[in-house]
Length: 465
Image (tube, rainbow, N blue to C red; front, top):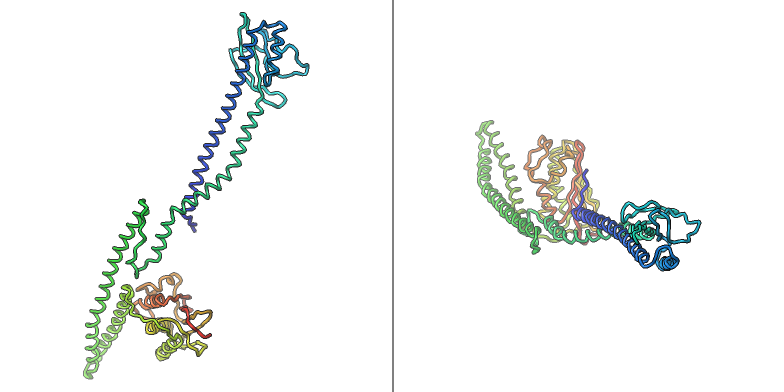
């Protein structure tokens, strides 16, 4: 089964991914820029120190004690001055003159091939940046070697990298929360449209979706949906009007045919074949009349003209009347009709008495039709917690599992049921409509070849339990 993912969640994920991708690109760019800037700054510092050392050598005579003293002062005043050495063209160190015997720093000794050359060396686990620069003094070539440690630069880069990594969850949470806020805010009108669509049915097609003045695609969608609802409203009104008019107009000729057939049956001189034909005409006229009545009822339902008058109604009294009316019919089909009301006090609900009688009669009539001879039908009433629940259970042919979602659809009939009874396929649709008007919940449970149970739950008023 495919899991549904809401648009707001998808937008949040996309926004978070895009935000984090941008942050990643920004972080990498800033990391590289910082590394490059620190390296360039380190090289520039080394170049300045080499130029200052060269300027010092130009103001004094290399090799005398005065120049040696000036160099020592220069080295003492310069950060990392102990990493500034001067070599002659033969590779012999001239300055500093005195060095520690423990000094094993890997100074470059070969003459530089270029005027200025940068390199890296390792000493005691630390990295150093080295600059070798050639200077000409009095026709002689000297090589100034300047070094600088890279520890501070690398510590700063590492700290920056840690900061970037630590900021990932913070920015991820922020981007997800902000993305969710933006997506839900942008999709709030969509939620309102969905709610309006869900509340729209065939009985209230005249309703329109709330108009949006956003100037975007949602406003265009709302206008398109309202135009579609207007077209549907017009089409349904025409169909409803046609159904009601046709049902009304057909009643008169069918009634006329039915009356003529009954009058003909009173003629004692009719032969057997003619009698059977007129009896068949009477039967078909009755079924056609029932179909027209059902169609007229549903047409009124669709048009919103129910004609119902709601008043406090005793549900127990209606059930007893319907059961008494169905008793003789059940007896003729050798059914055992059981009423399990288990109470004598009224059960009051707000409803229309005639419609409720029709509702329960449809349920009970279906149970009788589709239950074979010697079967059992049970009507049960239970009242608890302000709710009255009526169950009509039979031991009939049952309903296939794949047909259960459609039993309340108009003109839907289970094929297996056709072998037991002919009908219009509108009875359960009318029952569903009546229960909806009364804000009742109707449901069905069924097992093939074992029977069905229809239940209807009403909210009670002042029920004495």
